[in-house]
Image 1 (cartoon, one colour):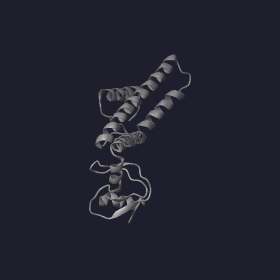
Image 2 (spheres, rainbow, N blue to C red):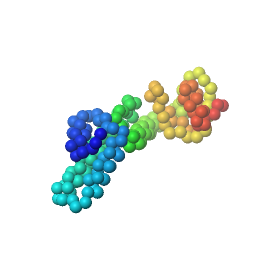
Image 3 (cartoon, rainbow, N blue to C red):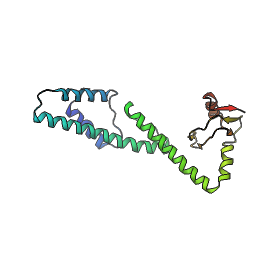
Image 4 (tube, rainbow, N blue to C red):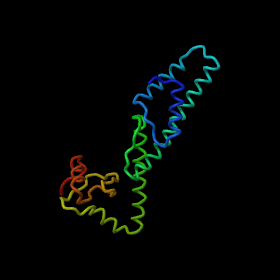
Length: 182
């Protein structure tokens, strides 16, 4: 795709009119950078050239801000439901996954605080016996950030906890040297 001011305006309009992230080519950021570099490098700029360059920058900013807003909303939705997201650029993935991590950690901390306020002793027992499924007991070798299993159960495991976990989680922890069999 060859980037032009008209193409940028089409992208801006498509992002504005849809609640979903629009599909963009994988190299769109590079194409926009090159287009902007060509327009900026032009010598002997007229007033019209200067105005056009400002308009180009404003349209690019508008596209970025609209996508950024959608990514924040998608991260919130995905952190609650686990729904996958489509049409993220690789440059946007870090923002998306960082937001999900922050939101999940915040949610876990909040609900852990509520649980602790109700009954601290009961919470300690639950952490020691996270899930009583058939399997071997393991010792957690380092404190782990809270995580969610496929059934949306939140786990908060601390160093030296001895627990019984579903085999799939247990195997991942052992494989990654986060736990050892007791």
